[in-house]
Amino acid sequence: MVKQTKTTLPAVDIKAFPTVQITYMTRTAIGKLVENYGIHGSPPKDTACLLICVNGDEGNKYVIPLSAQTRQKNLKEGEFVTGNFKIGSIIFFDEEGNINITSKGELNATVEGDTTITTPNLNLNGNLIVDGTIEATDTITSDVDCISDGISGKGHTHPQGADSHGSVEVDTGAPI
Ligand SMILES: [Fe+2]
Figure (cartoon, rainbow, N blue to C red):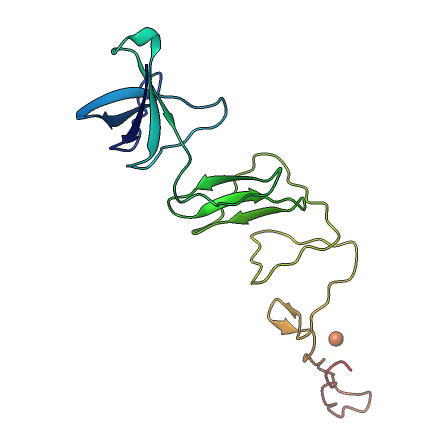
């Protein structure tokens, strides 16, 4: 038996299978949520679903959630998108081979091993704050200044002691 239905509550996931509450005809029931291995989600309330009663057994319900109404539509051949369509945070694999990540909140990565990014240029539009050492095998440049422990690389001067005749010398100028 297969019926069209919709969810009436978000999924509950405290047992061996996540379950979801659905309505069909005038009835409310709980069914096991059908998901592919490695993909897990909580369909929002009012998600269209198919209800399957295995072997026609009303006590053995499975629920297959269908496409989200708020999904990214009109994908081109081969494109793929996944994410939280309720809020709009998604990962989109487009037809040109780009992977586009849209986060409506933060983007947090917890990596237990080293991380390597191999790319010609890494462009960051914002501030870079590092809690640790920065090493480079090539030049580090700034259009403004580099500050070393509070000392300006651009504007610092060097004090000079008295000359051999005891005359006080003035500080050097800033680097040119
Ligand atoms: Fe200097």
